Image 1 (tube, rainbow, N blue to C red):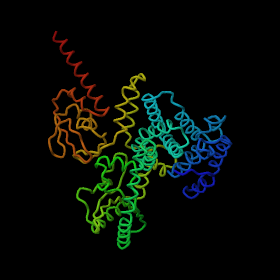
Image 2: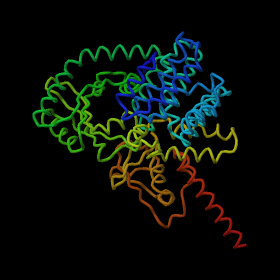
Image 3: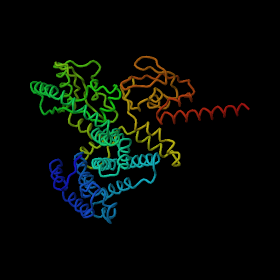
Image 4: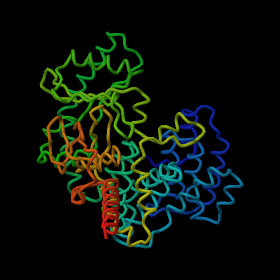
Length: 493
């Protein structure tokens, strides 16, 4: 993320990328911010105004409504000066003032430490998302620049901010489909939390990029000529190097052997429409031999966070193995910026959130909790729901179900419907009968077998159910069955 030092660069970007932008409001927002921060320096020695400028520039890069970009310039003025929210409301209207107010509340120092601080930050982020997810986009931009300039902070604060960014902000960005933001947050945090491992992975990556770069460039040239020969127009093709933290995590699964990582450098092809996506896939398979089992159609079956692309991995003639990702420009914007990209197509700024059942469930968890102690007791469940990796499994009809890594058929059954879970007797995974406590994997096809005469779930299922939704439904049904049993016993007496 870039630190910019002048308003002119921000305005130039907005002029280039926004149709008929309201530059008067943007300039007024900058003037208010500049006056509020005049003469103040950050711990890095840079003027304070460079921070809101960087935040605003990032929000503009994300293509968000100019109200959000203007609020980015103003996001620290209430905290750092005598300017009030009412002053901003009078000058800029309700929307910009409300955004600044929400970010200011989110920035207030959490007084707790350790796990309590972690839980309280989670709570605040979830509530902010439920109210207006644009606030979280602003917080991402704010956190990214703070990570970029983290070298100015004392060591203990560096580690706390980096850990919080890796464990809270990055996973939420991932759940919102914002892979670009997620990757930036992870890599910046990785460099502070595990500096030795970061440098080691970076060195290995640089060596492999030098080794493979020329070969991948030849593959890109071949693909470009092939597409041009076949009269495809308005396409982009380029290499994408895997992010360092993502590479580090993947290497851990492969005994730290970087040679086993096929998507170290991927080739990304952006085309005009869906028809061109499939045509390009066919051409690539004619030119290169595809690896069996490595073709994934996320266009026909999008990931639950909305991600769409065609993936295939090929052998080139020189035995180079390369992954291709093929998508339209709209799919690309959604892949990079997720939910935030919806505002590129909804200029009124209204929310258009899809696939946010996970967030609704977390808000419901909070409503069920009465005390801070209860919230702390639920912390592990909340980590499983949001902060673990996700898997994507299928119903026999091809519907995609999004579950946390480690989920079992019981979690799947209750994700379909509570009665499917309550009446579940057995399961077929990929047409093979399996135990109900088996761990599911991405791509599995799950068929739940039910018995309409079954009274309810087995309480022992709580030992291996992973999701809050499944566990709460099992408890509810178990309590209900117990009450019915007691009622029947009393009637007999």
